[in-house]
Image 1 (cartoon, rainbow, N blue to C red):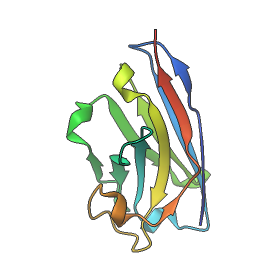
Image 2 (cartoon, rainbow, N blue to C red; image 1 turned 90 degrees about the vertical axis):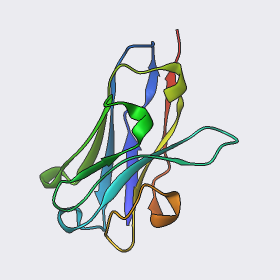
Image 3 (tube, rainbow, N blue to C red; image 1 turned 60 degrees about the horizontal axis):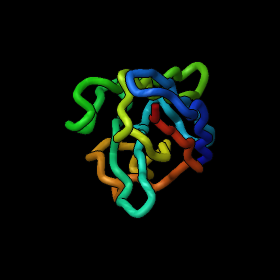
Length: 123
């Protein structure tokens, strides 16, 4: 399984970014995929996940600002992030569970990880 993130960058508060994750060696159609983020010195935090049926989970703290989606034909997972806040500054990771099932947004439920892409929100 290979997960490669892209789309990170620097943006001002209130701005938007769309992250992408190219997925290989993992059948997106039948399996769960998720997004996490991590700030140095803190535990990795679950952001969102999408299962094989398209059902989505989100971290409560996001208040509807983030949207997870996938394009199976392009083997790509997306994370649309709107109205970004300085507190969203983190390295964002794409992840997949070996089980293929979205149990929770806990880091321990996911086994495969990308290298991450940095998002910085600052004025």
